[in-house]
Every structure is written in C-alpha cells, then in structure tokens.
Image (cartoon, rainbow, N blue to C red; front, side, top):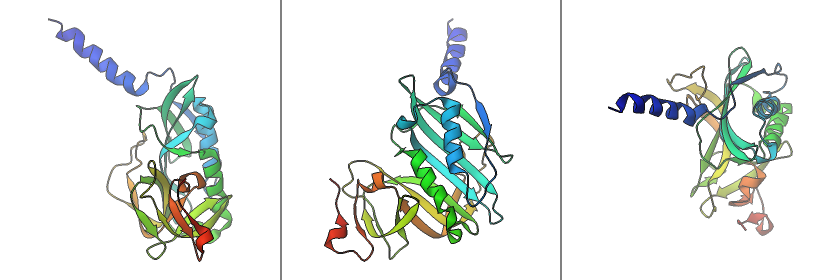
Length: 239
C-alpha cells in the first residue's frame, strides 16, 4: 500500500546523498599550458567555485595524464573542504575543451593530502626541469601504509619548495595513518576503462614504465626515511 510512496522517497534520498548540498555544478576554464600543467589554476578555480575554506582543503584523489605532444588527456581531482562550517566533498574534471566542471559528490574518505595549493604550486614549479615533463607521463595520487620504497627499485623523492630531494628509502610501516604520495610515470597507458565526461574517471588511466615516488613534507613526517648518501643525521623516524 505504501510502496508507491516509499520508492520515490528512496530515489530522492539517493540523489541527495550525492548532490543536495545546496551547491550546483560550476565551470571555469584553465589557462593555456606553458612549461607545465596549470595545477595551481585548477586548485584555485576549484576553491572559488565551491567556496570552501582553502586551509581546510584535502585532496583524496588526483590523476593527470599528459600526451607526448603536450596536451592534457585527463585531469581529475576529488577533494573536500569546509563550507560554512560543514565538510563538503567535490570532484573537478577537466574536459577536452579545457573547461573544468566542479560538482558536489557523495562523501569520500575523510583523509587526504593536506595543503594542496602549496603542493600543486611546487609540482608546477618542476616545469623548469624540461626532462621531468617530456614525453607521455602520468601523475596519480595514491596512499599506502606498511610498505617500504627503496631507491634501488625506483627513484624516491621529497617535493619541497619546487625542487626534488633524493631519498634513499622511505618506510611507512610505523605511520600513524595512511601516507599520501604521488606516483609519477613517464608513460601513461589507458587501461580500457571508459573515462566519463562526467568525471570520476580517476582510475581510468594507469602509469607504466619509468616511475618515481614523490612525497610531500607533511606526509614524509609520518614515515621513517633516509636521505640519499646520508649518514646517521639524515636518518629520520616519525615523531
């Protein structure tokens, strides 16, 4: 008897779980690329479009794939921040036209990469190193706990003030929480999944080939690590 009322109500509830936050889809256009991808502009545009408190911003997912001719194939960002004192979650997806669509999404992981504005600025600054950006490549934000990365297997870096500092090894075994890092691979490969124009395609591309692991200072503080060619003074454990 009440079925006809229950189903529409449930349908509305499912819709509102993802999008009834009082915020509608917003769009903005990124500037043309110069020496590197417009990462700072992406974050600043996302902050302005959503009205989040930038200091509260956390990035939970980020994928960027760039072709060898310099064009961006995919740029997909999932993030959260406080809006009027309430935590909100969003996705920013760059379309092939260069237009970015920002939309509210269902709640994702409460954790994420801190200080994304500064991190993206530091990544963008690497554009002065032409060898870093040449050829096809991908960047993917990942998180891990309980693993060790050694320079004998692939380059491990600290990203600080727009430069890369070589690390001998990093262990996340004693980390108090998930450790976020960037996986940077020289070759981006499409894995066959459909990258939707509606966003949410962060897993559509994977990196293969020559890869590096890049940590930010805040995430590295959670780990034990040693700088390249360092002695005892360069051996650091989490506080």
